[in-house]
Length: 258
Ligand SMILES: [Zn+2]
Ligand SMILES: [Zn+2]
Image 1 (cartoon, rainbow, N blue to C red):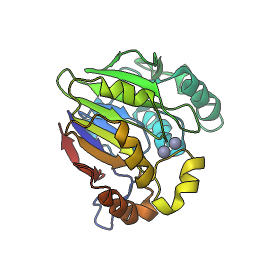
Image 2 (cartoon, protein in one colour):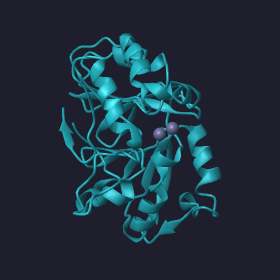
Image 3 (cartoon, helix red, strand yellow):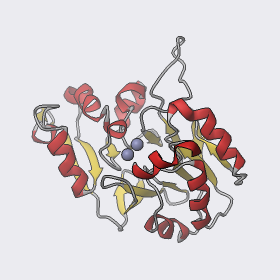
Image 4 (cartoon, protein in one colour):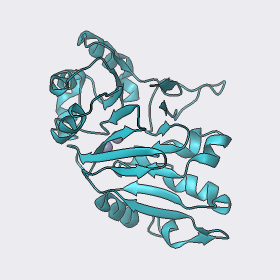
């Protein structure tokens, strides 16, 4: 499985910078997990292939360019963009984004080929297909309805925590998997901002270190994501101090293979 955390900012030469401002993971060049930077960072080939987007929750940095990518592709979509989300999140997207004020209600619109956007309600806790992948979504502990994901292609399995603080179901799900190859988990704030992390339901390196005691660590890669750009270096230093094997910060723009 090939996974890239799409970059959201670029330097003067157009090279991806290390700060993660928006969240969008691209799997095997065709399935997106969240859509923060999707309209900014896809190349033309990826743009022609991505037709499935899983939205873990409706916070802006996870959906920022979802309407834009559908708008961009509008005339050329020969099949709808499938937006996989829980029924609660679909309701929020319809109410707050695709509401004819912020953006058109694309789920009601058609181009010459047919519908341009289709909601695919996620059956929480049960496996469902997304392109060539099998996905299981379970609720995690964030301030809006949010799911963590386990994604498998038949031989490789990767878990995505999405935004969360202390949680249980997610660990039960991933500890049950025979072979987990990678865990992408959030570490948003440095330890000095533990209060803010707690009220906004995110991890610091310290609380993540505690939480990872719930993981049956089998030697998989653990990649920290969602590091607030301003504190990136500090968070990475504090993650290193945990001395957890194979724990590192994920780099936007780099392709990881498992
Ligand atoms: Zn969030
Ligand atoms: Zn977030």
